[in-house]
Length: 360
Image (cartoon, rainbow, N blue to C red; front, side):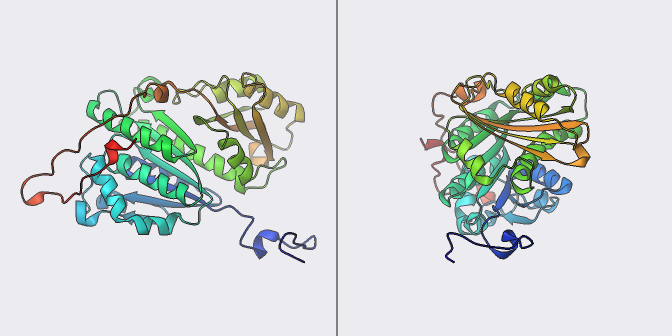
């Protein structure tokens, strides 16, 4: 029998016998904020994904728990960070290109998570996304933007967003300023944990919708098909009691940390986790409610996983493409910033002129 068709008896597993069939998923945290998100994800656990953190700051990297760590740019930064300069972060990534390729080359789906505005995350994340895309991976980027008071960092963040839009299939931008409205009175560490929790749950949800068997199954190529519909993409996430489908829909679409308008979206991939007692009508009403304002010809694919731990609960994860984002649409013109001069004196950083801010 040829490789176009493979036969097994009812007790044999295809996945245990062959290298193909199980998608390889990699989660890469770039810089301090990206590392913090991966650290939390690694702590709560994610089925079927490897984790990697890339940084120029040795002290911060030592505090992170993940599958693999990569300290880059040691000859440029001496392990002390990029000093808020994206061109230094990118230079560090260029010097570590082969090591990065070694980690990225076999991934089918790559998540890149980062905080924009600083040096390492803003400089390294676009470089990592482009390398992953060049290797044939589907690339989903989750990026946070600075607070309004961090004025200079916002200019860096805009340049980073422009680069990430070019190198990713799905770019999800989360606004740190929303924390001021959502949890203004929490201690700083707990407030940022809210953002890390959301990022971790998004990545875990997408990954396990693919890697964990479901009653109505989603597969890796379902994700690829929806993401290739083009345009800005985003992820919606919600959890509510299963006795009120309308409330589940409102909870899922009303995410206070994402500035998006899903009306007129071109595609949706929806995964529902529920208890054994979930009714078909309930699942259908949730899907219908989430997609009510999408285009009439939108490509909608949905799956349902039954798990006793969700008894009485509906957890919904929806990826939508072709949505509108005020944060991204407001960035109309390319940002052109010249790299600052190298630091003077014995601590000068050897740096080749970077094209980071000049790329189209």
